[in-house]
Length: 208
Image 1 (cartoon, rainbow, N blue to C red):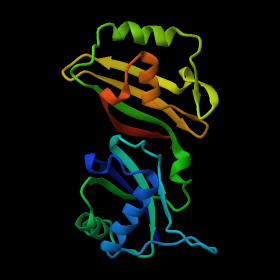
Image 2 (cartoon, rainbow, N blue to C red; image 1 turned 90 degrees about the vertical axis):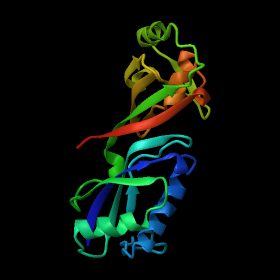
Image 3 (cartoon, rainbow, N blue to C red; image 1 turned 120 degrees about the vertical axis):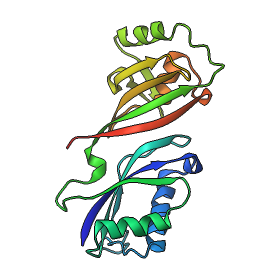
Image 4 (cartoon, helix red, strand yellow; image 1 turned 180 degrees about the vertical axis):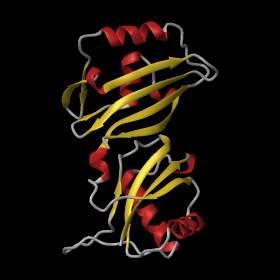
């Protein structure tokens, strides 16, 4: 048995495919590739596969991670060849590497996520630097999510506006259990409608 980690991009074809459905997408991919996934023990065995961090619907990504366990000792080269032949549109494998069997579960290692937010051309961006300064200078930023209040400010690790064509924001947000920031909430706080943007997750930060 071996544990491997895939780094992949998720394109427009799958931008409205949720986390649970992505699990099924990968399971089908492994079946088509004739690769035998290892299964958990118990009354309801499940494929041993861990996704790093759920990607919100409507977002694309340049850097998703998934760990999986194989009941074989096939080489990385052979596993990669089989997977690439079985991929559906919207997934591009960027890297495949072995991971120690003793390492913690992938989802427990994620501490932050990086996003790039592109604005539609008709969005008025005058004064956005002032809006960012005002946000950063606040003592707190209390919002409500699912009926519970939380402070958005500690969840924003970094935010930078790049005034190019197209203009965009680079945002780094906390992504740990109970303290996960969402870029659309940052945009709402700045006074922008996230439906007038395109959001790409550009990276995940792991604790090790």
